[in-house]
Image (cartoon, rainbow over all chains, first blue to last red; front, top):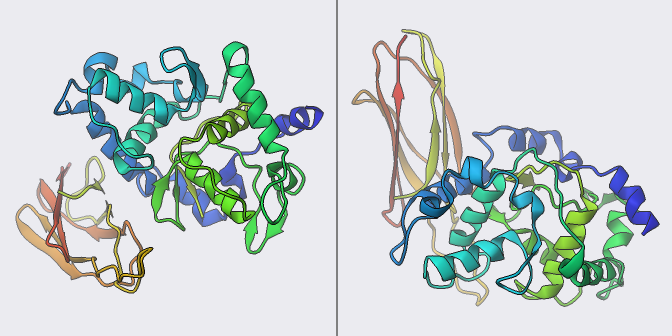
Length: 240
Length: 106
């Protein structure tokens, strides 16, 4: 826990570890390719679905009602009964209130909404609750973060706490901060959720990848969000 | 209709060049990739782009497989009078996209 406090004090946004051209691309509100998904999400927010009303008809103007919402996720949700990330919360709202059919994880329809909602929190500090009912999930996430995994036998902490700023192949190792996700990853030529990025890290250390929506991934997301406390959100980020 | 973004300055000066920026959402499949089952993914690129200002064509372009996914185009144009700038494109599957923005000569 001492290590956590030390690194939280010097939290650096993920984009700081990218090259100058990628940083410029993220900062350019027009050319940032992630904004394609945000634009689409805005349309999805306003348009009624076949089975129910539009998001906007309950939640109103997203720039007001969704401001700062994403900065508080993952969060314990009483109706779902566990800690959920923003994407799962929106999906539950779609299914329960819009009576819409379930969408697969990482599908574009889900990504555009979570990107649009998270975009409304841009510049606001990440502030998640880890007390009460979220405590068990947070502890699980923290334990996973420090647990070695895969054939390379590495834990998250070995790269993202002890070796950030060093070079791995031709990449600079980041602190593993979640503030820019969902982000546009140039390698994938698409917007991607934080869970997809985490799964790629599991692949990187040659560990078994948890499926999308796995409680372990949500627990890690909560731990990362707490670790990034105070870091301003910057969705959609751009990463190489 | 395919998704995209188009940006023109809020107002332009008569006869002076202004920058137009276009971003299209498209996978730009080269035709060289294979899916998880080893089956070739067919070529699917934006092959035609046409830009018109107030009904007259500024330029049209044939794009190739060398462009990355979600192509970004930027170019300069001049206007003598206000009008609508329209960008239309189509891909190998015959899907079309269209974006329009008002160019106001101040």
